Image 1 (tube, rainbow, N blue to C red):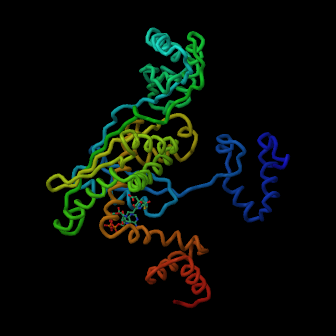
Image 2 (image 1 turned 45 degrees about the vertical axis):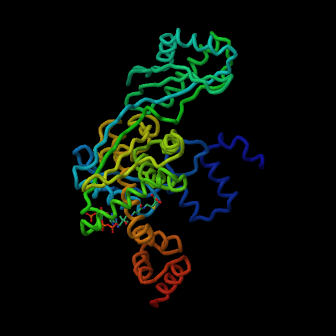
Image 3 (image 1 turned 180 degrees about the vertical axis):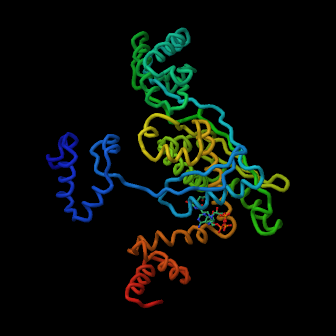
Length: 420
Ligand code: HMG
């Protein structure tokens, strides 16, 4: 790499921006885009900051969760996600809505040691649990300020010579990642000093088995199709699709991706780490014999019933949630007051998103609804100006099949004043 990039991070914002401009031969419009979108808050959030990359935010409607109505902000670039969430929520709202329950809300971590005397090491941990908890709680000023602090110390064998010491933290309203990491580092140093072991690392785990939310919702047959008979068939086909997601890894992965379409979008709107949610869902989905769909749908009498227990490791305060300006506004729009309510809303969006996708897949197919909404983004991707989009979409709708070539052709015709 050219040595000019060495210690790039130490340069002023203006110098860095100038270097990028020269390196990439950016024109004045491109430069303008960068400077129009930059802001001082973000400059302090990440390293080598250039500008803000914004994503669209939409509001999903129709959510009835534990008897309360919610509007849900969603940040996503994907057409049809917000519409599908609203659609799924509408179906689920007709029969008392979604019931959501937070099973637990702890953040887990592990300290990994190379150990020669496993039994001696295990006994040391057993005998010093309260001392380790004390060290953990003293290591971070807010360890006991917002929640019950460190807990659940136990050992776990990883291989013949590696042992993990697991620890959990009740971080109250925050996600607790940084607090837990500080605690783990303090405790692991103490353990390594007092035992005949070698510390490899100490870090939280994104396998979030103690941040679980259970959501349940049902839809009567007549809300799945125009007639009860057709609705029953749709319900049975959704139940079959759910079964396939338990059996086939290819389908399970896409089934879960569909759920994450909604979950990531809400998590982003509330300023949470969506990578943690992705990692948590996929590892949780692989925690039994094989990777499987995280939700299940079955027919019970006149209803299609959906259930999902899912890890939702998020925080209501702290980290980016306290810095990104729109997060507070989004919480106000959603009307959520604490982390458990946030967890319930996020999980409920996952269930609604899943229902809408499955219904489309087993009835008219995904492309009809999705492509219909994708046409706007197709028009933009092929060069339409925002004011031309409606006209381009109207012309695209007349085509039997659409692709980039037809979109470009339509744009050219509109600009030259001709019609198809
Ligand atoms: P529709 O059948 O035309 O619905 O849905 P509708 O006209 O009966 O409307 C029902 C409700 O949906 C409306 O209620 C709206 O809330 C909402 P109303 O306001 O009438 O009382 N709705 C919309 N909201 C905003 N903008 C719109 C809009 N249209 C309806 N334009 C829809 C059309 C696209 C919603 C439906 O076909 C659908 O839900 N499709 C699923 C789309 C989807 O899942 N997209 C995600 C991307 S595909 C993917 O990545 C996931 C996947 O691979 C996952 C998997 O395989 O499991 C599929």
